Image (cartoon, rainbow, N blue to C red; front, side, top):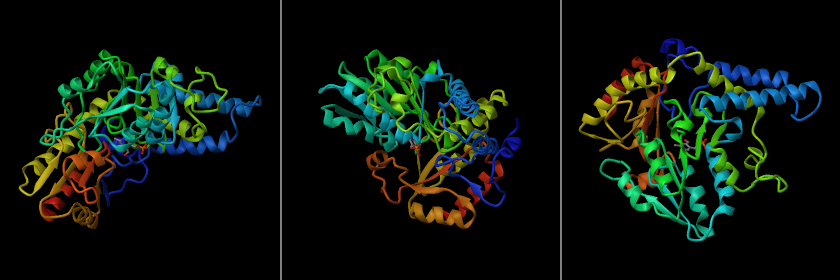
Length: 391
Ligand SMILES: Cc1ncc(COP(=O)(O)O)c(C=O)c1O
């Protein structure tokens, strides 16, 4: 599939506005929308009944979860937990982890993470758990493995980090982090939200214990998806009905269940990528090509500070590009872009700790421009021309 054909798969994209807020939420695949509507028309019943329509609905749910599990190479569908969002799922795992913790245990969180992967772990401090912060290098916005090694010890129970920060766009060395954490006997929770729309996720190759992503940023519906390794999930407490046994997966971690129609719709994401051999290789190369001129422009502009790596190499970053200007507020810049029908966003993107550490105003924050593979080079050129006028 070429990128022009890919663009036709999405509802709502038009030639007038260029949308660069994709790390906030992506556009939705037509086939996802169709599947949601079709599910609600054809199987509008509760699961678990003996009558044929209920059986069909149950079959569809099992099929959707099996397909989503296959999409990220989970070992089995029982390892998939669905929820309303990544934030909600991370809180659910933190709650389920609580009964397994002892006073004196330690959890490592990072300064670069979205608050969704910090607050749930910070909430465990009242169980006597010490929360240690893996700090960002304020000069180059990087996390260092040496610092992680200094923080890890025999009391570390969990390391929680973002594979890609939703502000910096840098790809962290996740496999290496997992290896170091496991060598210290700790579990690993990865926030893959900003990574998953841009690269193939292979949870078995990665080897983390938990991996969370937001399907509404991967061209699907408003649904969060969490993968947990079976042994890690079995170890967790039950946060659902009190009578459920420890091996009731995923139910013990899914209080209230997940939306059936959205789960069925989400399998449309899998259809889309299944029909496109090497999709993520193509996407990585295309998005790097889109990013290069913008990164070159921003990193050499005398009145701009780029917040994140200047390198467009797809091994280094995804197309989430943040910056601020010396004499203009981020708000003014975004408003000027909007006046030119260019949709970007400014603020702290719930990465309070990162902005705080870097001395950036929490309210005005940074300007963030984020591409998806349905953006075009023509749109990027429009953006650069507008920034040239505005900055
Ligand atoms: C990196 C990252 N983690 C977590 C979240 C929270 O995701 P959700 O909106 O599904 O709760 C976001 C949302 O923007 C994010 O960008």
